[in-house]
Image (cartoon, rainbow, N blue to C red; front, side, top):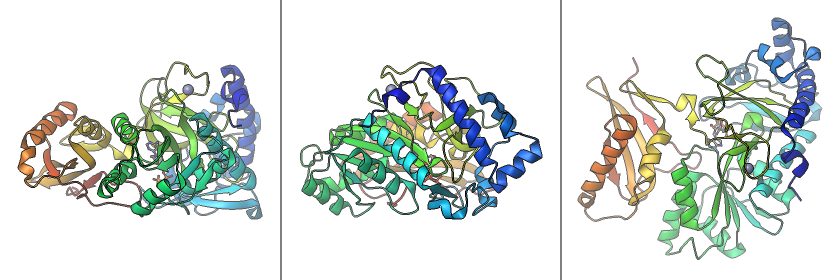
Amino acid sequence: MFWEKEIETMDVNELRKLQLERLKSALLRANLAPYYSQLFSEVGFDPAKVSSLENIQSIPFTAKNDLREHYPYGFVAVPRDEIVRMHSSSGTTGRATVVFHTQGDVDRWTNFVARSIYTTGGRKGDVFQNTMGYGLFTGGLGLHYGAERVGMMVIPSGPGNSVRQINLMRDFGTTAVHILPSYAMRLLDVFEELSLDPKKDVNLKIAFLGAEPHSEEMRQKIADSYDMEAYNSYGLTEMNGPGVAFECPEKDGMHVWEDGFLMEVIDPETAEPVPDGEVGELVFTTLTREAMPLIRYRTRDLASVYPDPCPCGRTHLRISRIKGRSDDMLIVKGVNMFPIQIETVLMGFPDIGRNYQIILETKEHMDEMTINVEVLRSADDMRVYEGLKKQIGAAVRSEILITPKVNLLQPGSIEKTEGKAIRVVDKREKE
Ligand code: ADP
Ligand code: ZN
């Protein structure tokens, strides 16, 4: 049973006390890593004197670059032979970073994932197909072990080979999947090519959607198309991977497992804390990790904290959907925007298909935005979609105040990637 009621519904004051106890030992452990022992002595921080959660605010943030500069072992706080696993980020935004785990770390991580799965209704007896990449990427092994711990039958299909994915779902009666939202959309095309109906011809009940930003509208579309419940799953390699924050049955915000992670939300520009409800950058401190404690790690992921408690009874903080990374923010013709805003607009049109991409170019010294988007039904003459094109242009304009060029394309024509979807291609001339 993975409804860890005592911890998940712990009184908030008790939870803060638990965090403080764990923080104290986390800081002492961090002090054993070359990077933090030097940092702490440089800024005169004494980990033995911590008496409140706020005390860590005098420690400088750790950034992805620090991990890169102290690659490979600079953050390791245990003897090398205590390490049983390493993982690496996908390298979406530059050189990948590595993270290490002891057996205890792997165990606790597995538990966070098992708890998350259980929260969504995943149970022993479910058949779980994990279409995330196995290997250095955390999405594969992370969910794999968590699902096994719950007692699910795991099909470690890994990504790609869509026809085989569908065959596995049919042959073994897959009830739960872990899938990139962009891949869940793309798979619908393959169902269609095989003349199969994902609502009837497979038996999916639950999906864990994670690893890339996606809008509420896209979640809805995926859930409806497969007739299943789709839950948002958030994590990052530096905080183990999946199992940091997960939606509960309310599907309204993701609970951050605060017994494992201390979260701060800061203004990405000033690094000052932002009030609940306001969007800021998520910053995490690992509370239980032994091999590689991270203190005040800046994720660059933007989200807001829900100010009110969740009706489900879990007391752990909820965060909103991830709006994007601070480095996903685009400045187009002087206007700041996130790709997800465009996705939200696109998903509002029923005739829109399953893939889109935003192209930015410089034309006569000016930014130009083109939205390539597939339509749901192919047409011999794409001119039938002229009206839709105009509507999309206008809707995007009213959302981001920029008039894009809209290209409507036949289903399946935007180039596919096996990993995380590439939503923006920026070909602009840099000054
Ligand atoms: P990389 O940072 O190289 O992509 P990871 O594989 O560790 O490496 O990916 C973690 C990142 O993926 C997070 O920091 C976040 O930007 C994104 N991500 C993970 N889960 C979600 C989610 N549910 N919604 C939006 N973005 C997500
Ligand atoms: Zn809840």
